[in-house]
Length: 359
Image 1 (cartoon, one colour):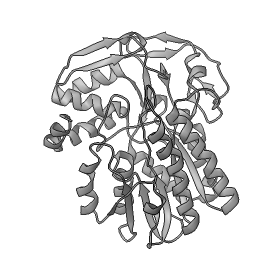
Image 2: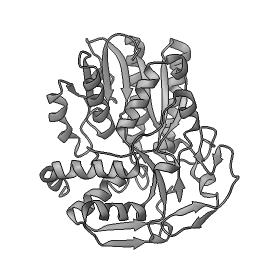
Image 3: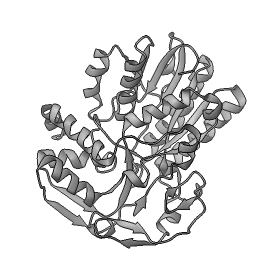
Image 4: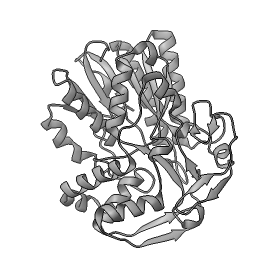
């Protein structure tokens, strides 16, 4: 790992991705100071605090919307920017104020902290920066357990392998995606104006232990917990059959990629990379149900709502060719591996998760 001296700061560090990355870095580099900052707004993030403390990771209760919360006497050498309002439905039917203040203004506050500390930046962006109408315009066929693309050619940046970095960013993409894309642009200006080193990873669906899933974010964790605790579920949209598809990948695979990037800033600095499981590590909700039934031994009632949610997509699969060619990276964990890890985590934390589900 080659980055500037100083502590590693993980913003959103009590959340699912942030806490997993903080733990991974502390385990790999026990001599490095790792700080996590989080406002604990998302229910469930408080359950990560004991394991962070046990690992010797210092927790700072703060909010990236407040610049004063990002003033550290400890020199910061690396920022892992994992903080976000992650819901793709945020702002629909209500104010986007919190989302904009967190995902855009908050990122600018983080970058200003990096400027002052001369810290490197790994910015976790999202596949939601891409416009959804062009993707939904690609024709699909209905298979036995999933929808499949029915074309060989489509919009620029699309192929049967998925969505590459050249896919259109102009067009509606959700407020979540728009704020993350704006943050990418601001990071590029900080690189140009102030000499920051930074890399952008546009992540697809990340899934694994310590993810307190909801309908609008963390669906694979939600699915496993529902099967474990025998709670009802619902297939929403696309005819209510559960055949919509996403690729997914494990936070351990994300950590492996970030290590490769930090070891070679000549390749990483200024780079924008689509990161995900790709077609080989993808599931429909129906396929997820079948795997969850197999792993848990439980079946649950699943209702059907055929009406699509705003901004939903029939299929999203990441074309990972660029990140594979640049860093030789690919996910090591299969879709079944991810779900089995989730199952083991739910089983080990059954009492806490039962309590959390009541809120």
